[in-house]
Length: 83
Image 1 (spheres, one colour):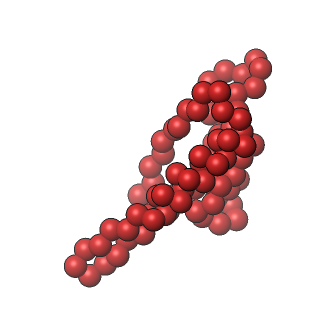
Image 2 (cartoon, helix red, strand yellow):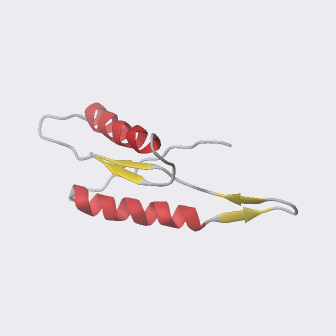
């Protein structure tokens, strides 16, 4: 099993709006299935969302998103978490 990370930056989007987009991306990924002659692979995603607060910088933004992502990973995979 391999993990990959990517970032989606949403300009002028509220946290609740980002959460809607986050869920759509996660659901689209979940629908992907890959088959070989004798195996079926299902793709899942765990997501984290954060907002840029006044006086934050990009490092703080990514730390907040990572924190949301890893909090989400604790209970179950294939869900969303926001901070």
